Structure formats: structure tokens, C-alpha cells
Figure 1 (spheres, rainbow, N blue to C red):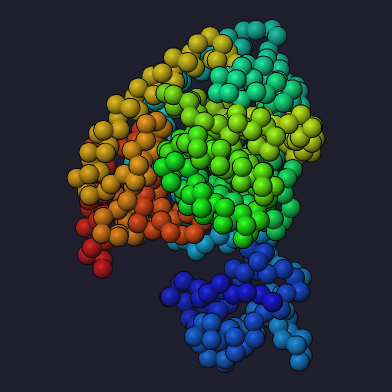
Figure 2: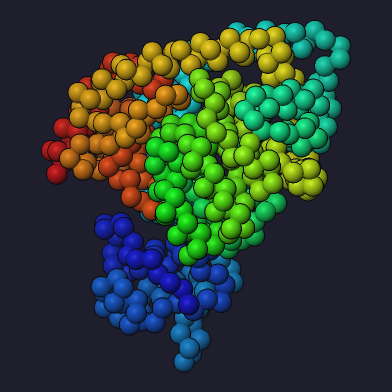
Length: 473
């Protein structure tokens, strides 16, 4: 039977429309599949605190739309002609103006918002654009550069060999044959989800975690469960309890410079996580996208595990170029074979040009110099942001030693989503905490991008949003 998750939040809608919207959300998110029985009139009326006649009218309208149908003497059931799957409907209810997917779409539009302290990427001025242009010119002059053909299924061999050596610097042993190039870190996770999971499987994520983990898993019709994250990694007691209760198949995490907290895994936590993973037959996807932000490498699960039950992924989108798309997967050799087949089936081949650009930048030292500058610039920028936020009584949950994010608590239990909505009126994009929280337990938290928060004009506008929020209430 369809399990209703509660009343629809749009209080401007009529009671009938609220009941209809609640059912539609269940259907469009695939929580209710064709043939599933809807709650009885009495159960639905009690759940929504409405009369039975209201539910009858709602069900009748849904039946007229073809979304559900009645069986005399049995009740109402979901019809077979269900609408296309909608990622937004598969997650918790969020106002469109602060939904992370919507904000990402708007922020990527040219000149959409003046200030973006809530976005997840570095400013253009911080990126090595001239070095990338130089690499492009060098490639264009080479007769050996292939500008027309598909790349090899595994990706550029020379780059995979170089990545193997870079991984070894962090204690991860992976030959070039154990590395598969992808279009991005997101593409890597997408392939792994297709490889390891089936619709309805459970996946464990940190709470909070990168919001796109939620969206990606919902797109694969995966049930998401979460574990509270601490400055040293996942809460181990809660981690063990979730494994015993929910039996997830996969755990997705950032071991270093976690998004959104910038915390990193401690050695003790890493060992305990792997021990519990072995006991509960849990696979781990270790997203190491932010590793180059670190001055001193933190523990890697793949280094302790030897790529037995850990799949290690990374990309250069955050540190080098979001336009030059390239990520990678390092895993057991037998798994790489299956992932190559999936890559061919879903995208046929990755770009042949992007890996060539990245290889040039890695080989000629341009990337190393850029990363050194970037680390220093972030380290010097953090005190300014912390001090500006302190004047607004916004406090960091944790003071990271590396990375570009600050995870902060708002004063007086202020709702971050409401504050973000107010700030949008002044063209300021903020990142409310519940966008990163599967349990929706981060309502008074917010993620700030240090690099995007350097303009002093941002903070009076945030104060205006505080004042506006106080007036509205």
C-alpha cells in the first residue's frame, strides 16, 4: 500500500489540491508504483486532517486525470500510465528557490546572481586559465593530437600511468590497468551505481554530504540512509547502528576535505569504518575530488583497504577546470572490466582532448604551481571570511586546515532556507544546510565558499537578509 509521507506544504492550495499533490509526489518519485493501493479514505483523511469527502473528491479528480483508478469493493490503485520520473519529487520537500539543483541551474546561467558565496566552485579569476590556453595551443600545433576520433575505452594511457603515480603518493596502489578515465567525478559515481546497485537498494551517505550525491542516488531509484558526520569522520556508533538496521550495500563518502564541512577522516575512524564494512559486506565509494586542497595528505580508505571493497574516484573539476571535464575510477581489475563495458554502453567514449590537456598541465608543472598558489590563497582568505561571519554571529562548526568550504551554524536557530530566500532578493546565493542533509537536521546550518566570499559587500547584504527575515516574522 502507498505510504503517504505527510501533507503537502503549499498552504495556498485548497485542501483537495493538497491531498492530490501528496499523492502525485508519491507517484512521480516512484515511491508508489503501478498497481499499489492507496490509503483508505479514513486513513488519508486522518493523515491530512481533512474530511472524507475531501479525500473522495481528490481521489475522483486523480482518477479523472488517469493517475489512479478504482476497483469496486477494493479501493483506489495507482494506474499504469504514470508520469516521467522527477528527481525533485524523489527527495524531501524544498522550496524551489533554495533547492540545490535549481540553484545550481540558475548559478550556471551567465550573470544570474551578483554574489555566490553558496556555490560549489572557485571563481574564474582563481583558475589557471592562461595555462589551459597555452596547453590548448600546444596540442593544436601537434600533428599527433587527435581532434576527430573517439578516445580509447579506458582513457589516455599516459594520463592513467601518471594518475597511478599520483595515487601512490597517497598510499593507494593502483596500476594503470586499474584506472578508468571518466568525464567527471559525477560520471564516475553514475557508472559505479549502475555497476553495483539495483533500484530499491540502500546506500549510506554522510549527513551532511554533497547534495548531488542525493540527486544521483534518487535518479537511480536508490533508497538513501545517512549517518551523522563529525570533524573526524562518520559517527562510529551511529555508523554501526545504521549498518545493522538498514543493511546498505554501499557507502559514499569524502575521506579528505569533505563537502560541505571540509573535515577529514582520522586514521582511527578510517580503520574502524573498514572493519565495520568488512563485517557487514559494505562496499565503499571514496570520492577524493578535493584531495589536492590538502597541505598534508589525510588517510585514504583505499590505501588501508588495497582496493578490495573500496572504489576510489577523483576529478580535476574543482581544482583545474570545470570546462575540461575529466575524472577517474580506480578499482579492482575485474571490476574495471565491467565498468569499461558500462561506459561504452552509456556514453561510448570519453573526450580524447580533455585528458590530453590535463596531462600536459600535470607534466609541465603548471598544475603543481597552480595548486600551491591555490592552497596559499585559500589559507590567507579564510581568516577574513571567519571574521566577517563572526560579526553576524555565524560560527564555523569546524575550522578546517584545508579546502574551500566553511560549514557554519546560524545564530538563534535561524532557518537557513528562509535566510537564503531573503538573500536572493539582493542577488546573493546562499547554500542552506538542509540541502546537504538527508535527515533534514541541518536547518540552521549553511555552507560558505571561502573563495566566493571575499567581497566585503556580501556581508551587509546577509545582514539585510537577517533584518528582512525578522520583519517578515
